[in-house]
Image 1 (tube, rainbow, N blue to C red):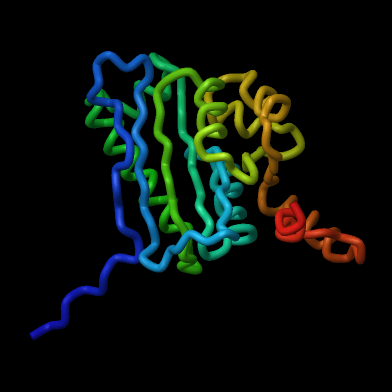
Image 2: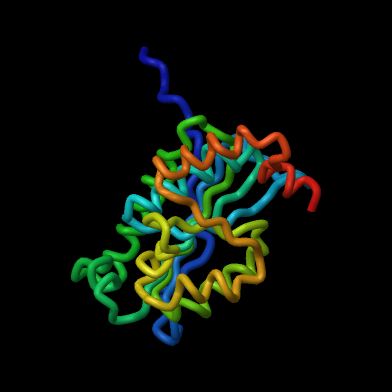
Length: 213
């Protein structure tokens, strides 16, 4: 007899869902995938990251997973657009609630695959159709993240404006976020900065900053 397949490293769970509530002013779906060896400790940290399908968004998420996150940490991936926006219509795919759910599951699959080192982390996807700025502040209040991570195309800090489909959202996050914001550059620029930083004998890593906070 053939042996059974190995257990999945991440277990899926729907922890919050208002898509089926017709009285809700906004619609949101919270998906959670927890690594089978994940364990919350007093050193566990939560990071909130803006995510979408753009390359610079992938860069920010990959940097966070590869460089900053450790076993026991939690990543909250936020994806939100205004109602009746082009992105909301695209996500629904003409199927309404069913389309939103399918897009959320597909997107979380892609996020999970980025954990190439199989770190024992907890992944949360906040998939929302509603008021962008209010959703950002709400997620910060709920999760109390150590940091907010966003991507950028290059010199201009425009990653979040494209991410959340509003030209003023990027500036809003940087100005009004009550937690520190890390803006991740594209890979080539990030590598150049990294080499320069490594040559600085007085440099302080992000982990050191968090440990001392």
